[in-house]
Length: 224
Image (cartoon, rainbow, N blue to C red):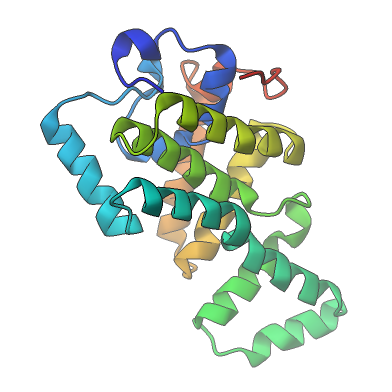
């Protein structure tokens, strides 16, 4: 999608809906919903985002971007979450607690199993796919901004994930909660500070009348 203010302000509602899936990450990046998360286009900003993608994601080309996008859909964190979820579902409640107690406290396994145990019945069948899909949207926008994707390619990829997300979750709140749980699962830590920070991010989006989550109905018809 074009990354200048004129284009950003004339995006179709369905295009904005796709972008809204990445709202948490965009706002953590200091982008704002008032201009539909438009990115200022100058060399300093481009260099910053190029460095960020390379450092945080190992993305420095079209090929590495597409590989990362494919991985998020096929092998994202929701895959591990779902595997643990299935395993715990085969155990009784007592056996689940016993298994958790058998794991070394503060280990990656303990934190991940504990996260799944706590949120298992609070999330829909899609689990933490919101975490993978939100990052997918984020990478599509950044990839188009840096020229790794054409605007049409980025839009088509976004719609692919947006349609899955719309079917998987019932509203923006459920999506946001699932995203938060996914981020906690990825962090491998049970830090209340981190959780509070993320909850604050979601609450601000839900309460901000200018946010895309408030402006767009979850069940908006998605046509590219």
